[in-house]
Length: 141
Image (tube, rainbow, N blue to C red; front, side, top):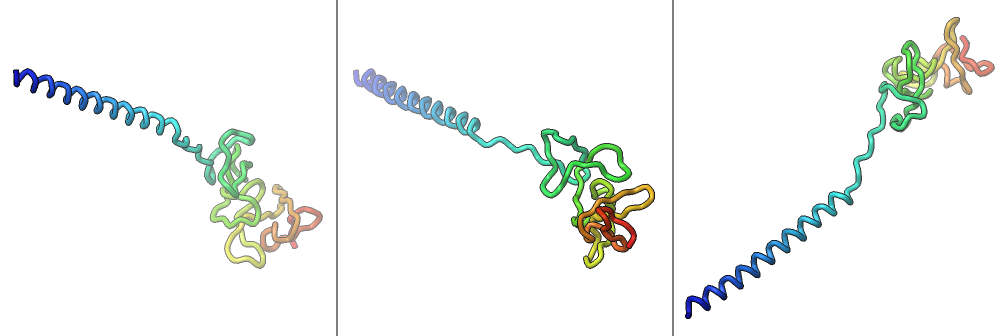
């Protein structure tokens, strides 16, 4: 009789423990699923300098970059605006070139008009060294 009582007691204790463990695991699993659903989604990365882009497209160019044509390359690319430091011509938007600007140190995206190239400007600093802003165009000074 003593062994029957021991078996019953043991089964009851293990049953409660097993049920508690299953309940605990179920609760933890459901919390894990809820956490996964509530995590912030990864943001789509912006397009970087020289990446191809579509004007008005879903993925925008990164800050301080614009989707525009680049001199000597067909299509649209993420590029830099006037007064922005540059290293290479392919970084500058539109008819801008990477050159020295009067009164500044280093090279910047600036404009210069030639027979085949027209650069618009508002102030002289929009134009490369040796050019000035006359009637809205960068012309030889």
